[in-house]
Every structure is written in structure tokens, then in C-alpha cells.
Image (tube, rainbow over the protein chains, first blue to last red):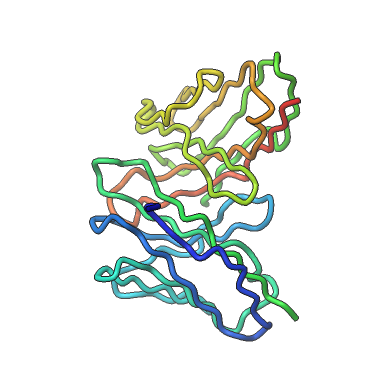
Length: 112
Length: 115
């Protein structure tokens, strides 16, 4: 079983709609959680960290469910520019410091 | 400023060449990373430097040789590469702290083609 798993998609979303997707992680002691977006042939860019209480940044909302070991990302009022691959990243406990664990990414395609 | 810079942006090299990739950050981060990324795959960790010392080598072939001259610079020396080494090479840095403050920031990458 992979340490971090994501639905690869693609999620085809009409412009203006809402899309949500999850990421599951296997290590219950995982410390920190992040969402990055990556455009084709570009570097991953930090979208947001995910806090225990959940957090929102504009149209983006991230949630953490430690009991079920998943994080989620919800995008409201989708824009064409939201089309990208969204990478879930989990930071493990300190005995494996430095090994941020990446999911394979969820592709989102926003259509006019 | 959360900028990590990498040079060159593109590199084409033959299998007998020696070349170097460079990465620089001025955020005071104490951890720096090299990743390799193939198309449609997530970044794959190669090396981690923590406080300028190599702390993780993910069993990377010796034809890749990292170097951290100081806390702001990270190099990746390449020698006798194979065509399958063609990929996007990403550098990242993080503050090297506990919790969610230890966030990685990536450079734009070097797209390497080995002929």
C-alpha cells in the first residue's frame, strides 16, 4: 500500500462549479500536511498547509480528518486557471525527517 | 520572499559529459533537497542536506553527486548519465523546523535531456 494515495482523476469541472477530492495517508503519526498545485512542466507550488481545525484561503478549503487518515481539498467557483495537478504532501514523524511523502497527484480540468 | 532559483533552466548533455546543476535560496532555510520528476509522476526524493550536511541519500547512483558549499547553495554534479536520467530536476528548501512551519518551497527546475 502506498503511503499517500490520491485519486488521479481527471476531475472535469465546469467553470464556476465546486470540486472536492481527498488524499489518504497510511502513517497515523504523520505530522504535517500540505496541498501543492503543479502546472504542466512547472514546479510544484505551495497552495496551502492543512491545519487540524481545517482552513480556508479564498476559494480553497482544506480539511484534515485524523481519525480516518485523510485530508481533503475543496475548490469553490472553479476558474479555468485552477486547471492543474494537485499534489498531497505529508510530513512524517521526526525519525524519517526530510522525507516528505508525495501523493501521485489529482488532475483537475476546468472547462468553459 | 519564498524564492528558490535554479540554473540552468534546460540542459542537454551527452552520456560522456560532466555538468552541474545549481540551486540557490536566500530565505535562511537550513534544509535543501534534490528531487527528480518524470512526466506524470510525483517528485522523487534524491538527496537531503540538513545544516549543510548530507542527511539523506535515497540510494541514488554515484553518477549523481550532490554538494552543499554553504547554507544558501546546493549543486548537483552529473557525470556519465544515461538517457533514462532525462527528467525535471527540482531543488527545494525548507526552514528545517518542526510542524507545519517546515514547508518546502521549490525552484523552477532544470529540464535535463541526456542523449
